[in-house]
Amino acid sequence: MLRYEPGETLGHTLDPRAKLVFQSGFAVAAFAHTTPRGLAVLTGVVALVLLACRLAPRTVVDEFGAVVPFLLAGPVIEALTLGPPWVVPGDAVAPTLAAYRTLLLLALATAYVRTTPVRESEAAVAWFVPGRAGRYLGVGTALVFRFLPVLQADVGRIRDAMRARLGTERPVHDRVRLVALGALQRAFRRADRLSLALRARCFAWNPTPPNLAFGRYDVAATAAGGVLAATAFL
Image (cartoon, rainbow, N blue to C red):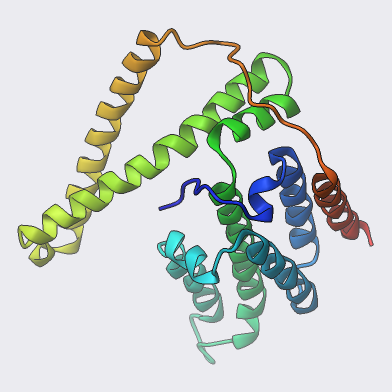
């Protein structure tokens, strides 16, 4: 499940602001160099990041396994035509590169979430965007990071309950309807409880943020993000 995992890796020690700058620079480079050579270089960068965070590529696949079929479907659909020759492999090249680029971005996102506490992400967003807008964005980011794993667990429990009651023998559209309705009902109930909890705890508009400080590795990560972004203009 995609959530923060405590650890002592290099990824855990980096300042969240440096990690966000690095990810932004990587995204700019990935969109500017969606070519076999460019993606090969960026694959090496992602491999170094996963190594620094001690994450296996299998972890990324496990976290975003539901997205992979859609990424694979894009090139297949683009290669099909309504007339002879019916299949044009050349048309699938660009979608395939774009799908692989998305996988690289998802791998970086997994590394960030697994190595960054939610409070630090909230503080970093609020630091980048000052004022009330930054507080709104920071709180929204924190709620997403905290709420999404809970909703994923709810969906998993709903599906387990369906299998236990032989729900797998129902038609596909019926199963989708039951899972979707059950997930929405639980999401609304959890949202109501979250709202009540925030009011009961006197939710602070300006809470004390965690101590964020740049170190030498943070400077290096920020510089690497700047270099990656600069390659878009080369």
